[in-house]
Length: 345
Image (cartoon, rainbow, N blue to C red; front, side):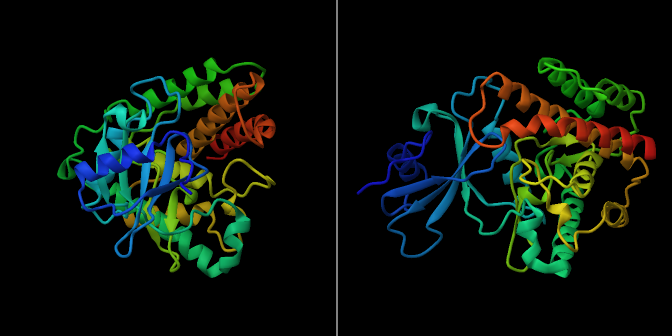
């Protein structure tokens, strides 16, 4: 009995396309399942049911169903950055194929190798590793970030991957516009936070490839607790590397949020304190991190805006699934943390 294909992926057309472009890769009928938990783009694990050797399974990424904006969810950009980083020490899956013909699956997509590993999102998931292994895993996350920011964009063909000039100012304006587009209630402190960030823009270091959403549950850890692959490059660009560090520091603050829709891994025993992560990054990268409070406050602001947008869509009945009713309660908490981070420096 054949498997019912998941939404957004025509397995017969995919198989025919792979046979044309990569003959000999697939030997039998394909099966597929959706990987849950992605931000927006759809991710599938596709398996060759007749594989007797070799990998036998791959990962397919495509935009969400019903996407409208041609510039959003850009498969070419994701494929390009992952392919370019495949020649560097940054662990990424090996890319196999980019298809921009929408007749195949209804949208552009790309295929990459399947990498085994675990994305840890909560303290409960990390706890069985124990304090020593947990600390080692998170410290390794910092080291991988240093490796990413050490890549010379021009040397790997990414010299035109973004516009680093005015990067922080554009980011602030972008998230300010997103906030205005989802205003449906009073949020004390949000405009104060936005204004304080705008009035104290730090001088950015030399631009690098930035991931844009770098955190523990966007990487796969192997059984040795090392980073096997960095995933979810949909927000990557050329810009200020300290925005990646600020986000990682923000996610390293312990928050007591049962059943949280955001990562709570920082609560696991052994998880390093933010100060240790900042010090290690500074020592290994050689960058000045004295303004990290601004970047961390900016991360709190960004996530508050993103969560408020989700809350707004929930109030309009445009979300599907569990937990959306609690997201709105998190926004004031993130605003307070952002303001507190700036005030404390």
